[in-house]
Length: 314
Image (cartoon, rainbow, N blue to C red; front, top):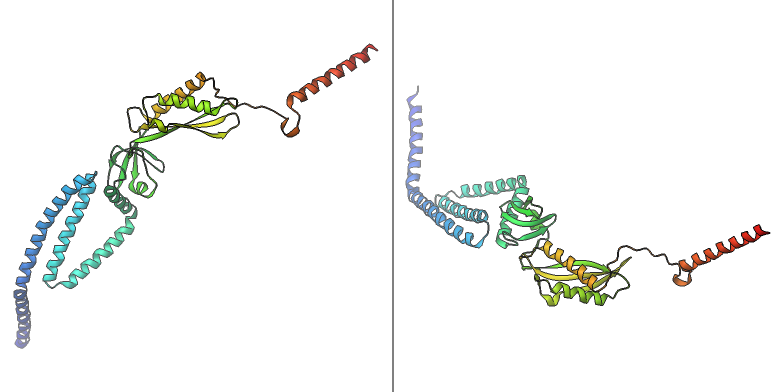
């Protein structure tokens, strides 16, 4: 083997090693600074995450949402320190590649787990905005019950039939949400019909007096009875009154007592709550009344009988 070729080979290796050594010595201060920066940001992320978690636990009902937000902030602080450290080492291209790769991965995951991500984002948004809290009675779409648990992806609602419904957060976030607990009061509406022979004003006075006599009724000055419509067999009224909600007297119990008291008040005032009635009257707009038609028919039948009797006698 030619020794000159070996000398060139070892000379090339030596030059490479010396170049790497020189570059390493030049980068040694930056490398040390990068390590110190990474350690500093690691400690900073730890304490920032801990502090943010304490603050969010006080401000948010859901501890899971608070822990998630605190973890996200902690990771962001760590990534900031990592990118700054890489910049000190002159690895700008590596930082750019990492950011581009993270963006592509995030986009792919977003499409793959679109439904999960939507529920997660909705859960975070509701945890910050607080449209409802634990124990609130809410209604949205086909959901109606008491909130018992708020998670990152779903909310557990106990219906008034005793079932537990697991509701995706996006349903509560997208649709119109009614919170019956926020104001602490609720209005009850009770429909009732009276006969056409009775006076609606008299019925309204009797009903208002009976309703306001109930202990659970609040805002008694706003208790009202309105005539709603002319129905087939009755004049329909609507009774409105307010109760504390939730309160000692439940919604169903308050409505039950109200119906009973309305019936008693109308009976005491001699006002009829009619059942469906059909009256045939042919006298409208110049026509003949049914009783007149029947009378004429009876008269005709009697005349025919008399004529028949006379012919028989002959």
